[in-house]
Length: 479
Ligand SMILES: *Cc1c(COP(=O)(O)O)cnc(C)c1O
Image 1: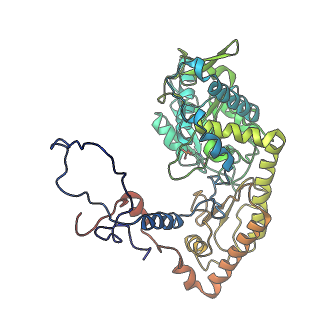
Image 2 (image 1 turned 90 degrees about the vertical axis):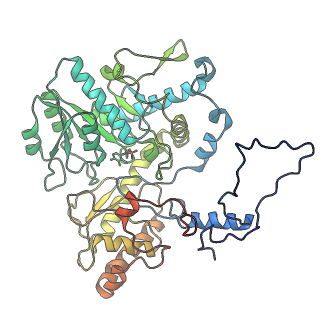
Image 3 (image 1 turned 30 degrees about the vertical axis):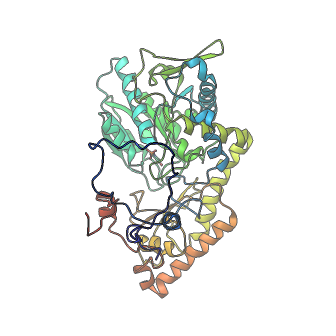
């Protein structure tokens, strides 16, 4: 019954609302506005509607239901108190066109978060105008371009991107008009210094890197990389979408980076996924501050105001970005405190290494070194099932699968990020299931090949589902 779509539950004349009876005269609608036929709406009771939507929501899987080890994407618990705070009307109802004097508190919050992110990363200041990580990358690269243009250095048309980079890196570089050059990884999964030296030239505007990289490994040669790129006149861009491995322990600026972005919707409390609101603040070293997008926050005698800086790359969004996402970061940083910030990093790294050590007898571990916040396996050691089949079988046990077939370095990549918020019991439960699946692959391989068995839908044509989604009800009677 509850599997039926709401239109299929419709019974003529059944209603789920009652309008109040108004006293007084009725005013007929002008005929131009009057509808001749009834609207095509399902006729259902209130309970039908509530049950329909509740059951629909249960078909989804979210971080509030269970473990979500999606690597390179930091899906973690987001404190619910922060959701309460952003729903406070004093924040909800302020308007971007209000006079600056009436929103000094909002300015102070943005300035504080900029200062705190600066203390955590070593950068001089941040802009919150970007709406996502990829948007932050574009802003950062526009700043890189502006830096070279101001120096009348017009030859720099190339940006170096390592093979392990997140897909948005080469995309942002192209969008900004640069040519992306790929640089290979060595056998340890790190940037190959010899390969890097070969592509460096006076045509290189800079390099985009993340550290730890997308294999979850710390680029130990980062100081050497920084020296090489700077010596040839380029800048270093840091992709800080997932910052939880470093918080309070290491600063990208100290590693030699010049520009970076952070995903507040991954590391600093805002839930992400499903296209919800995001924020990709961009931080720069001191001499690049002028280039940040307009408007910029300016503070004179304890009063804040917006200014348009003539050296800026200009406006990149309407108004000032997603303020409520910045507010969640403010609450998150304040409630966590400086000391606990370090524990975020320590626990993220500990949890990933615990999984790495616990699963390495069942899953191939191409790189044995200590990992940071995530670990990448290369499929089952027994090779009796593919990574896709393992991932589908995980659904039967009630887990969201890890990231699969990324990074591209390995053919059967399984990229697991447990995050800092999971307990040992949760990790042990997941490890036991992963081992069980490895055993099933030997004993009952059919079970994996036909998985999932217990989900509302089985295997989907994922490409068609993404390219041509059907998001409205199509009744055969009235299309
Ligand atoms: C998520 C992510 C991005 C892109 O962030 P969006 O907000 O999805 O645009 C970039 N780089 C890395 C490493 C990421 O994990």
